[in-house]
Image (cartoon, rainbow, N blue to C red; front, side):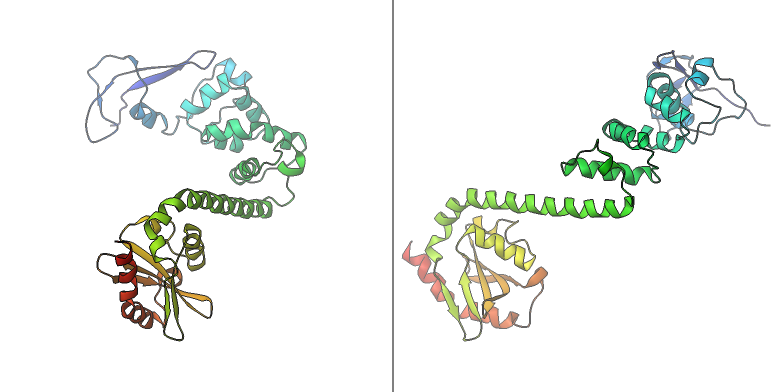
Length: 308
C-alpha cells in the first residue's frame, strides 16, 4: 500500500510574502531526511523543503482568485510553484508575461533574476515593436553584450535584430576585440610601472648580443620588449613577469630579424633554463640556440662582474 507524509507547507500572503510551516529537518548525508515526530512549526526555508516542493504537482488543486486575476491558469509551465506563485503575487512583470502567453520567457527570467532586472526595459521595447524573440537566452546575452559595448539598449535598432544569431556572433567578436584591446592597454600600463625596477635589475646586460653567423641572440632591454615578445610568440614571458626575477635573464633569438625562440638564463648557474618558440614549442634551431648561448656565457659573466 502507498502512503504520503506531509513534511511542510508554503504560505504566501496577497503581497507574495512567504512563510514555511514544516517538520524539522534532520542532519545526515541525504537532503530529504526529516524528523516526523517533530511538530509542524514555522521554519526557515532551506534546500530540503525546496527540493521536495520542486516535485511534480498533483493535477487536482484549487486556486485562489488572486492568482487567477494575475494570470495563472492552472499551468505551472515547468516552473517550481515556490518560484512562480510569489512572482505572480508580487511582481507585475510576471503577471504581464503570463497574460501575454510568454510563459517560456517568464520561466527563463525567473530562474535568471538578475537578467530579468537588467533586460526588462529592453524587452519591453522589443515587444512593443512587435519583435518576436525566438530564443530568449540568446537575446538576453545579446542585449548584455550591447550594454557592455556602450550601445543604446532602449533603441529598436539594436534590440530588434533581423538575424539574432548573426548579430549575436558579431557583437561577441566586437566584445572579444574590445577585451583584447583593454588587456593590451592594461599590460602597457603595467609595463610602464615595472620599467624602473627592471632597469635597476637588468640594465648591466643591455647591449649584450652574439651570433653564430645565422642566429642572432640579444638581451630584451625593456618591459615593453618582453610584452611584444610574449604577444608575438604566444607564451607567458610577460604575463609571468620574468623581467622582474632577479636571477633570470631573458634573451631573444632571431634569424634575419624574425623571432625564433625566447631564452631564459639562470644568472646563478648561467645555464639555459628554457628556450621556447611559438606557443612554447621547440624549433629546428633549438639545439643550435642553446649551444650558442652556452658558448657565450662568459659574456654574461663579464657583465655581472663589471657591476659586482
